[in-house]
Image (cartoon, rainbow, N blue to C red; front, side, top):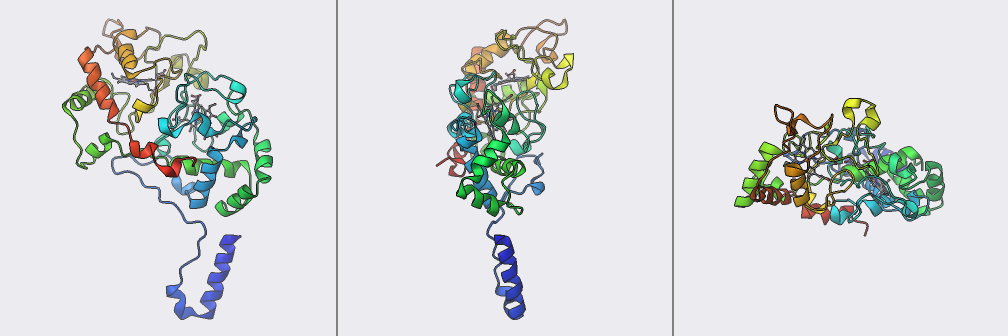
Length: 350
Ligand code: HEC
Ligand code: HEC
């Protein structure tokens, strides 16, 4: 509607006085936001042209992200489990907890650089970012709500009626637009300003000797899976965690049904890893030192354990590391912390 008014004004103006046309600044009530790919990043997987972020779409997506109305008890928003200070993870929560304190079985993942990912969640159950929020919104142990109810609740809020009308041409409050707005917000969450990035882009930073030694160790021992500038090859692997009988989480097998995918989980990206503790799909490891101890001494053999962690005789070797080497790797991992990102007010609730 507002766009149409702009259009009409443009026509009237143009017809009335064509010589002034060049001075005319088009009235666009909802400017597009620039989606900028950092120079050290690959092309995004998300097709931004199909859902280009706009000022109003982003604002709406952010409002929805922080709104408890998306859950059945009115309390659990996306932002409840995804807290910016901790790179949008659920700080201190081993597994997530949703409406009425219901416990999930997995550790909330960080939200950053989502536009560059092909599949989502620990087992890849969501194959498109636009569809991912359907899982938490409808899961009994997360938000336990239906789109029908959410739409009713939003329609009662004049602020939402206006925002949807401004953000989308069809002006509708429907599930498609809710999901599109959420994606416009989440694809803009790019973390690319860590010390590591500044070094990669030759912006004047340098590694300390420990960080440099850690980077070298990481490159030779970890980067085959945590690869590239996104720190994940986006594959599903078994890194030797013992099966927790409490959850018996079968991982990727849940999606594919293949025996070869039992207990495999998505290789997580390691950006902001200093902030996203506890670690692993069920949050079982508290510290980065615990993670390194797992790789050096904690691995459990199984049918699907990644062959990288075994020697030619099939014995489990893990990744042997001396204490000093572990500390160096941790020093390097801390260079992936992006303070600009966690303090970026564009993504903050207030
Ligand atoms: C109750 C806590 C909780 C709530 C509420 C919640 N999430 Fe999550 N989120 C999680 C957990 C746990 C995972 C990992 C899920 C899995 O692997 O099955 C996750 C995963 C994700 C992922 C996948 C990240 C990746 O790298 O693959 C995205 C995106 C996401 N959530 C966005 C959202 C949005 C948007 C909302 C609101 C509509 C939301 N979440 C609400 C806990 C939550
Ligand atoms: C064979 C592939 C592979 C290699 C090699 C590997 N990882 Fe991992 N890493 C994984 C997978 C898969 C997970 C997730 C496992 C899970 O939660 O079930 C993971 C999880 C992690 C986590 C926890 C991340 C989070 O968000 O909870 C950290 C930290 C980590 N790895 C660091 C390292 C370091 C450091 C090295 C080298 C010493 C390394 N990894 C080597 C596959 C690998």
